[in-house]
Image (tube, rainbow, N blue to C red; front, side, top):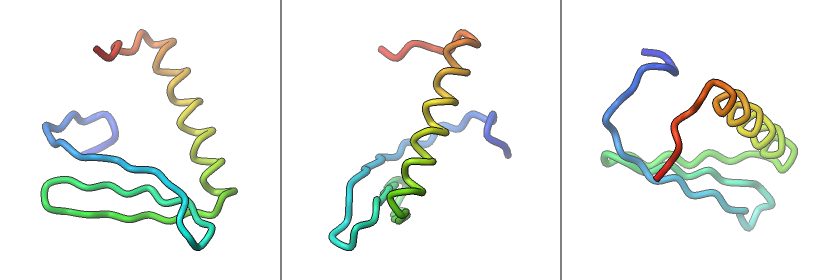
Length: 66
């Protein structure tokens, strides 16, 4: 399975700072909880990667959300 394989799985994503000065991405779904902590610099890098991917997807005619 790769990044382009579609799956019918629902999950919630929460993003927030922690009291330890980290940025937490918290994924919850199908009975699984995945907390991922990143330094502010790492979180900034991830945000830039998400923005670049969104721009590329839009150029490829990405699906519009309802």
